[in-house]
Structures are given as structure tokens and as C-alpha cells.
Length: 355
Image (cartoon, rainbow, N blue to C red):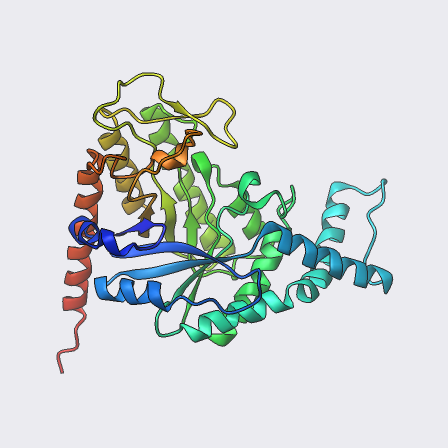
């Protein structure tokens, strides 16, 4: 299992990346302006460190909404959309939505698919892994532009997948990362909606945000990873697991281990930091569970804490505190990162041609 760092690479942190042993990174790239982005500088730095990249190709929520409204107006005026009536059952309503999606999305997002494919093609020798719209189910991130139902994202993902794979068949499309508290209904819904062949990597964001009882956390891990694995075997293509974001907010060494709740946009009571005394165990047991369940890559959020007067929980997930000191979870992540490096080297040596 390989370990990475979320947020891209920064030149001044090169010694830290080398010390940590990370072999992957992930960052996001907005395609809303419908032009192929300039990414060579980031790829150059990654190449110099021997680090692989996964890039989250996304848009603004407003872009998706405007494209959809324009297409719906055009098709509606032409009488090419079905209507939902009050007397319909839930199943009938879903069928209408799916039918309309199949008409709206190819028209609405044709340019997005074209630019995504051109991006993958331009960087085909630099990046083989492309995520589509990570955290699409988070209302704060996406503005609920994908809707309350679970039909919209799978339909757009299908078009994205077809376009990108036609341009670069050998690349891998990662489904958008989601999965707070291992609530994996999003993934099961995508599979139920027929999207099981529209991604190559099942990408989770398995943050425990509300659960802070370790026994309960272990129980959820033991149940939900195998359940999704079975669903992928039945309705997908047995895609491998990976995580483009995972981690915990943690106290630094000077903090008093009390009153550790931080602001959240989706969890009303906030997210409790892990205390200095408990954090290494939580990191280690989560990573062990991910390795046991076949994760290829886990990308940790994030390298450093960031200054945030609002006390948002995601700003305190760093392996290094605001004073530049390594937290005690650094040692845990470093152990797993170098273990992954050694396994990769052993695998490469074992599979090296001998003739």
C-alpha cells in the first residue's frame, strides 16, 4: 500500500516529502473555463521526487448548473423531455429522471468531456490517474448541484469516463472520493444506477468525523469495506480501493487535551480533534484496515496545519503543526510510507525481466 500527501507539492517541502517517504500526491484542477490547464510545473516537481499524481478534474458547481439549465431549456422547448407528475410512484419518478439525464447530459457537458479528454491526452506521459469531482456529495463543496438523488453524478461520470478513456485507453478514472464515517451509500447508489463500469478505481474519503469510539470505528471498518467489495464484484469490475483524502485533525504537543471540537460545515456539533495520546493508534489502525482491505494508495490530508481563524477541522489535519514541528502521527505515516516503498521495490525486482 502506497502513501501520498494531499494538496499537491511545494518546492520548499521537498526535504519533508523525501523524509516521509510519500510516493503519491493529489490536487484539484478546475475545468470550468473549458481550456486545458497548465500542469507541467507540478508534474516536473513530482517527477523529480519519483511521486505519482492523481488529479481531481472538476468544475465549479455554477458551471454544472448553468450547462444543465441551458440544455434543459433547449430540449424542453423541443419537447424532448419527459414530465414528472404528482401521481407517479418513486420508481416511476426515478425512471423519468434517468431518461431525462440521458438526454440532457450529453448536450450539457459535451464541452467538459472534450476538455477532460484533451487534458488526459496532453499529459498522457505524465499522469495516468484522473479523479472526477471529489466530494461531490458534500453539500458545502458541491452546493448540492448533483441533487438529493443519486442519479446525476453517475450519469455525468459515465460521459466523463467514455471521453477520457477513448482519448487515453490506458489511463485510470477514479470515482470522486466520498465516504464520511464510512457512510458508503453514495458508492452503492452509483453501482445500482449502472455506473459500475464507469470508473477504474474505487476512491474513498474514509474520514471518521463523528465516530470517536475506537471499538465502534473498528466495527464499522470490518462491516463496510467488505460490503462494498462484494458490491463491486457483483455490479462493478472488482475495482481496487484507494483514498485521495484521509486523515484526522489532531492536537499538537502543546495543546491541553480538552475542548477539542473544531468547526464543520456539515457536522452540527463539530469535529473533535484526536488527542495527542490517542492519535497514533487511530492512524495506525485505520491504515492497517485499509491495507487489509486491499487499498492500493492512501493519500493523507495533509502535510501541514494551516492558519484558520474560523477553526475549521480540515485545517488541523496536518502531520506538522503551525510551528513547523512534526506531530506524533508523522512517525506512523512515515512507517507506512516506507513500508509501501519497500514493497514496491520488492515487487519491481521480482517482476523484472530476466532475459
